[in-house]
Length: 453
Image (cartoon, rainbow, N blue to C red; front, side):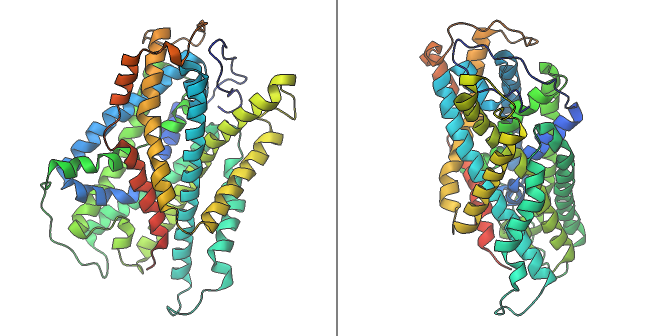
């Protein structure tokens, strides 16, 4: 939840109690966590299956990835229970010390900001392709002014995205997450049906070889597949919004969410790969005819799916800004009606600011692929590094057992208390190419905006 989310406390501070009782149901938590993972990487999975050398190697990579991903989610829930914090950056700061908390905040907000920009570029791309289909014209004729992306994307942001992003608690996103999940399911269903039925103008490729060229090619797609399931930034906020916060229950929610995500990703990857073979595009929809109505609907619904993820990303980024506001303005005089970060007088302007900045970047920056490629490496910290460090610190506070929220906060906790051997173990959790996984997804997602039918 956002309201009680405090800043990263110092080693001697004990987190305050939550101001409002959590009310998110287990089903709602499953859908929010599932939708957080179902992003633009869905379009890349058939290409990843091709690069892995076939269905079997790609499935093995998926299974290995799920072990790491589910473990990370459970660790974050356990760390949140021990620390008493309600945001990712608050958990890191509370368990690992203020220095790590500030580093986490910086990485967190930069990563989420660039993800938001990339999402808006993808949404604008889908809008443009939809307008091209609805208003066909000669290739050299200019499009009408009212279908220009510089007009349609700001209107969509103001009328749809902004209202969805204003709510105070992440639990509200369960409704849009259901819609976004259904949209992603439609895309997967279309790819499966097109494999058996075929599409007009679609040339069927012969079945490719099912063996990888080398083990290097298999492991090269591990980051792409692994980071396609990335939802760890939202894990702490979702866990702290649940009415049932027992660790086994959270583990069940995590398993169900990622298994459902794995099913959708696998269907898309398998049938997209089997349909086009070695000719599959990095954006699977680019492999289908551009005038197919079913594919056009799939593109539109994919834009809707991305649109439902943007408010979740904004919520997480806004929590960092609210923490900064709380430390800067609420500490000297105490929180007031106008200064409370979760109140409308702070929350709404921060939301408008986030949408305006990301919209301006999406419209003005010509090519985001290089920037996103560099920033994307930061996301490996949120899946491997920070959860590993939080586990090391949390276990020293309380052994892994059914967690109790009222814990005696130790007087001396911080970065200096972590032994060097523990740091080494935490760093070993990162695979060699882990930093580039999100790069592949987001870079291709951004590059897709430059393509035209």
